Image (tube, rainbow, N blue to C red; front, side):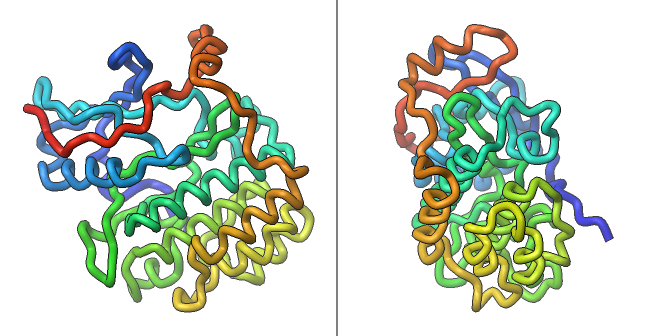
Length: 293
């Protein structure tokens, strides 16, 4: 059975356009008004306001309603989806050296750790929802449309997400999506990035990870095995696994997991070509939840 990476209720996401917003490039998300209710839109904005971190995409301003569509301005990342980096090497502009893999893995794990520290569950982690900045190799978790607040078993939204990066308890309807299902998805993504192969979802378990990472990514093997435990009660947390991820990055990436550091002006000026994609220079500012009509 093939498991799809398509997101349930994907139509609710609308379309994303590259446009200027307050003198900087932005990813403008346009969602038909009838496809998203006000409560869900406010929840999405609350998630972005709570999740201000370099490895999480930023909301640049409050949503506005125009021509019966919600206009949501997001940070524009000059880069490519991790899906392209891993599985479409001919199209990718990123050469996956050990140090670059380490930068990507550390960055996306730090982003997820921050989400979980704010009681936020992404629900829809997959390589398509992680952007990699071309110049710095900064990993940025995107698409928080299904993200929810989850604390002490209480949900702020429905359980939704793709199947291909869902753990056994979700696929078998034995449990709801929570921080532990995010951890499982991230473990699978790390294994696929290290080995550059797509893993069949039902086969993902510690034994399969040991086999997959026997040649590439051995330094991450123990951490990923802890992340993909079939029993969610035995699964690692991001807080518990992060030190090991960081050590693995140093051991296998030549000691550099920070990427090439550049200023916002450097990033903007180096991308004058129309085919490039770049990160916004907008500062990390939290917006008041105010939906403008």
